Length: 216
Image (tube, rainbow, N blue to C red; front, side):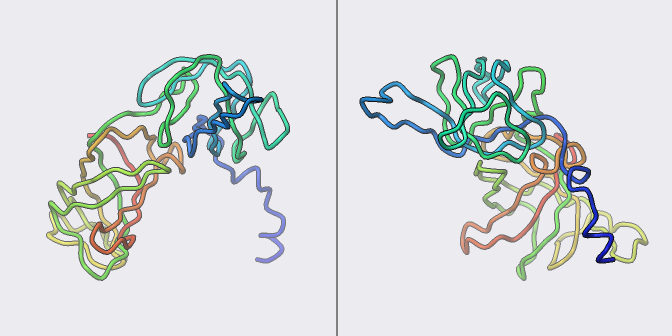
């Protein structure tokens, strides 16, 4: 087993899908030397970005083109998946933390209602109509569980239909509604952009890990 693990090609296990760049922070030095400099810092997931790529800023749907890609004091023509970089655009557009930059022909799903599979991690059970904070990448929204559809039986004998609660370590399918649109992919298509966590607003504890199946 150890020999096998040591010889796995890491490139084969990477998530090579559509490029996603969630913006973690906006860089504005506001110095005499860089008076008009504006860059967007974050980590690339899925594919890659190159100078000259036409992109779309979500959720505003503003179009622009990548002007520069920086890593510290170095400049690159292309940044691959997994790279933490700063990107500048040719247009002076409004971009904030939590926005996402994608290629113009690779738009994710944008929706406020979705279906997901969730693994419950809290001693207090999940119940219908409960409200939580949902963290999707760098984006935080309020979420409400609208339906607990099924619970997966851990002996693989099937599912329990229309349960009332989901308890510690159980896995179930839920439907939920969020306070503002999310821009996501299904977990099968994009592991980073298809996953989220749920946080109890009263205790600030992570209570569940979710995997998006589809929009409603």
